[in-house]
Every structure is written in C-alpha cells, then in structure tokens.
Image (cartoon, rainbow, N blue to C red):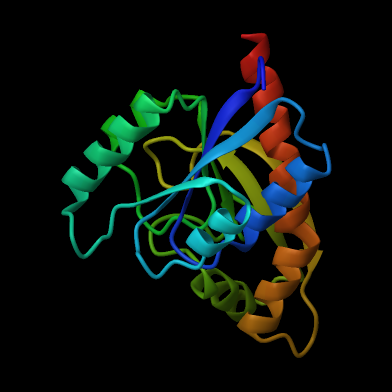
Length: 201
C-alpha cells in the first residue's frame, strides 16, 4: 500500500457512487489511491453495509445526535487521525463549513448530478436537480466532479460527462440514467486523476 493516497468517502445514503469507486479500485483503475474509511451522518445509511462487505472501516456521526459544528469537528479529527489525503463526498447531504473545507483545501472532491455551473448551488441536490432540469426543458444534462470550496458547487471542475434528456423522462428515470451513464463513469476516473496529482505534489 506504499505511496498511495489514503481516501475517506463521506456519504449520507445508499452509496451507489461509493460502490462505483470501490469496484473501480478492485479492478485496478485507481492505482494511486486506497479507500480506507467511510463516514456516514446517519446510522441508517446503506453505504455502511457496502463498506463492511468490502472490509472498509466505518464511522457514524449521526445528524440527530451531534450538532453540525460538533459533527464537523469529530469528522475532521478522525480524518486527521487516519492520515487521510483525499476526502470524497459521494452523496453527503451536509454543506461543509469554510473551516472544514479550508482544512482540506484541494483535497476534497464532490459529484453533482448536473453540468455545473447549471443547476447547482444551495438546495440543488438529489431529485431536486433532475426536477429542475426537466422543468427548464434542456435537452442535455449530465454529471460534474469538482473540487469543494466555500462556494456551494462552485469549485474548479475536474470532470464532466453529458447525458441526453429524453421525451417522457421523469426525475427518477433521469436520475438513474445520469448515475449509470455519467456519475459511475467519471467519479472513479476523477478520484484516480486527483490521487495521481496529489502523489506528484
């Protein structure tokens, strides 16, 4: 495991993007990184089961138990204790504070289910994004992997992939297509890209 970037994945839900990254790592597609920790903000997050099945350490800082500031403090302390080099937000439903983001500047990435800067910002997450895309009537959507900065969904873009919006799409149908055709493709690739860059630094 020498000379690999230690990765922590933060997730609030099912963990399909987490699984895509794990699968890519197992296939040898992330040679410069190793997922060593999964953190959830809910005890019910299914990502915890996925992590356990893959032998990855887990930690839970439940939103119901800890106020946001205390939760962030505990997460940050654990990331530092585990010598994490890259934080990957895979459906983590908490907007992180400036202090948290600055502590890992250039080492936190996120996936967003649209082509930023369109359909991004506060309140734009999950199905809300796909509802907005359909309401606007755009013909192409997609996914974006970007660095996390103080500005919500405003950090530098690492990778994007376009996905066609089809007649008859519902937000749920579109969400699944964007995941399958864009998110699960570019997220593992972006993780490797960033790990490779961090190793060179």
